Image (cartoon, rainbow, N blue to C red; front, side, top):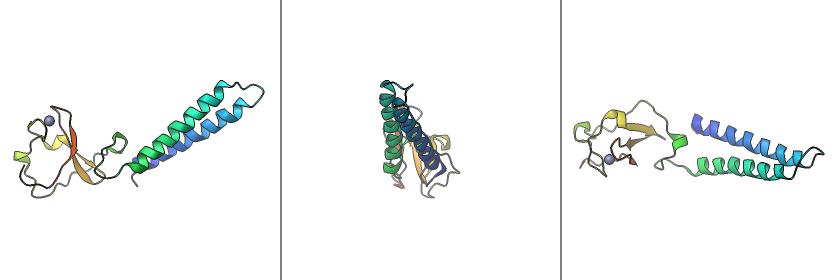
Amino acid sequence: MTSIKIIAYLGSAILIFFGILFIWGAFSPQGSGGWILIGVLTIGIGFGIIWLVSRSKAGQVSNAENITLKIDLPANVNLDSLKCKSCGGSLTMDNIQMVSGAPVVNCPYCHTTYQLTEDPKW
Ligand SMILES: [Zn+2]
């Protein structure tokens, strides 16, 4: 569980909380029927975030999970010959991010994002 995930869970909990308040408020004398829709939408977004966070695993790149950590690449990855899988552009350490403990390449040329494998062929 990363801190980003905890923040996402907290954020969605707050969204669900306010969504319930909106639905509740809709039944109060000052409330209107439109609040139910806002409440349902807010709760939906909250559960959507939980669903997205819980289904994202290492290897799946999610923007919410992108954390830049100290990069610890496998020794057999030669950065001199590191090239983008899709466009062949040369990559530097700045183009690699640690996501869920796995190195992920963000190509600056074609904007492809993929997990860096330990395959020594490239
Ligand atoms: Zn590329």
